[in-house]
Length: 546
Image (tube, rainbow, N blue to C red; front, top):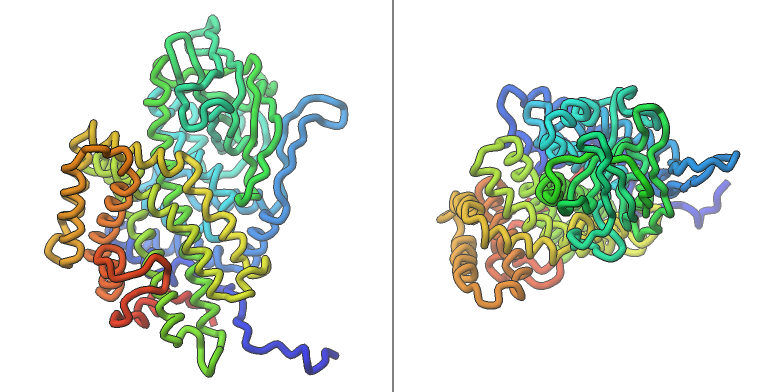
């Protein structure tokens, strides 16, 4: 029998057995806003089921186990044969299988596919973000493959399948396939035009052998990879299958797995190509143009992934403070803590609202929406992913010392939080991409201004921010040195315009006052005290099932 000193009091219950989707009002409202009426019931049921799965104790345990048992590299089998395989904990495969079955690689072939997939990806990122990499790469490979109709006809049905087949065998024998990507090299980093991996043409048209090294190869257990290499006429995009049609392994030498800060359950590798068979995608010398649509799609997933981490951090913080008592009352009712929680909730809602708006632009597919994506995706990727780390750290602090303990789950969120800002082009890359869009594609800026212009006149602080942004855009002197500042303002104005149009007044008011009107500090918890912060917090409170 436990002694009286071991009675546990004033500790919140675990946040389990709840619907992660329906308790996220910002997400549910965004999905309903962007989906056609005839899809509403089907998608609501689908996402609510996934939300209950995400909130279940079993799936949360899978996420913890996958994180605690990272993948292992097996270069050779017991007989000394080279196999270059990556072993994963069973929980990893369970999670990845559920992600594929939930349609997270099938957006291109489903009605309203990008919005429903974006919502699912945001939810799934809250369970264990590591398995998001192969889901993202596979989803994003489709537009690159579509530049070659024959390759698309062969591979797209496999990539958009909702069946997870983990076995390494010829892709033609599989019900579903996954894709990875290899772009960066030791000497080049983000400057992929400096790549030295060489592609030598073979006798069969469109086929090559590759020789070189990739410093970061995402999801090395995948069935195929999009790879950049130098062909005779310049940098070119290639498809590298993991297993050849005759059943033999392609030359895909995994040198080591990266030992990363976070994202521990996911394998990221250095690989060598040495006479590796590849099929060209697109024309020689146009590799960046061919693969750019894949990059754009993965950048949106970085926004979605960060929005998911932010939402989970805010939900955990509010849940803890709802039950925890201090100084004579619940923490959530203390004015100062309420200010912190409300500020975090506003940031999370702004991220979610922007991410779903961009997903809806993919579903629309019109010229205006494509132009908007050209500037809004890198701006959102820059800003939302950068806001993820300070938010998760602040949310952890809301739990006090408990938030610094692994069992709380908060340290995993903190370690994961910088990742999406670094991958798929770090901050400077995104800011420079925004500049290129502004300078080379006037339709992009026009689409952006038309989008934010829909909220003009609704909030004086937003109007002033738009005016200031136009002044900033009119001054091109030394613009590269100001690229981060400009990109941040673009993202904030876009978020503000969306919240003014679609969020409850208390949320939009808090955002515009603090992010656009200058009535807020550098840290979270510095919102004007005159705002309706209680309503903001209540809107973001998760609702465990009773």
